[in-house]
Image 1: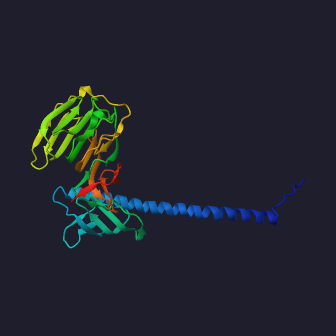
Image 2: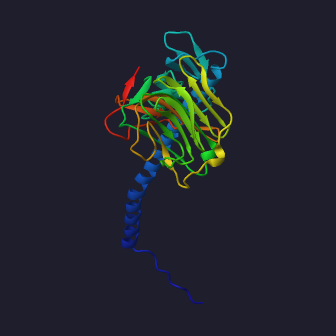
Image 3: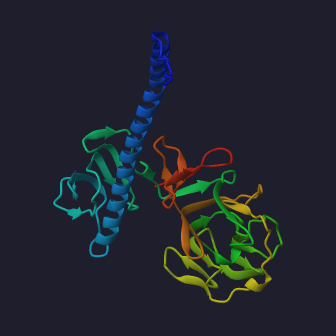
Length: 320
């Protein structure tokens, strides 16, 4: 019988392995711990987001039966109580326990949460944006806002553009994304002293605008165009037939601007109080005029929860 002699590890080899394992541990363990910590923080941020959305849903439900007052609220479990008041409402939320020292509901129904704790741990994260609502932004003719919503041949027939504005000079919006005069596109505004629109071809309404505040509601998908006097509520234009068969759009298109024609230097002096953009009846932009936390005039989109700033020169004027 033949016996094989086996050779074991030497002390030096064992020490080498231990050293290598120690080096790997020194590198890997902090990385793994950081990943675990980052995941835990992101999870807590997600809890704050979900809680904020739950509050907004609760407000929407409450508003069906009674108005929810704006102001600062205190959290007590799933109950929110308006400071210095007995008004309260319940929030349906079954996630991690969220407590915030700052719970604000502004006049637009937007929720702002800050200085929050999740399951007792402080989280450096806020929900929503803290802004100051103003009545309007005013362009003097050099400012404009890029909405980053591109109108092209694929969505042109589904567009609805609603803007509450006072146009102080000849100008308006070319909504076909081409910025080319004379095209059979979509445009609204004031030409000379009359309110006008074009869907397929130029149409004058013969309505004198006189620098009044109007709500322009051009709904291409549903074949409607309405111009309402904001002061009196009178519908000055109320059409349910548009000449859309002549529409002619660029394949690529351009992003829609506020206060000017997309892609061109032709901008106009106007006040905008609000603006909504729909794509196939889905609200994709809901702009309100605000001052951000630094006091910079901008449009805040309530859909994306983000600021849109002036892309032109100088700064917007604004009013309360």
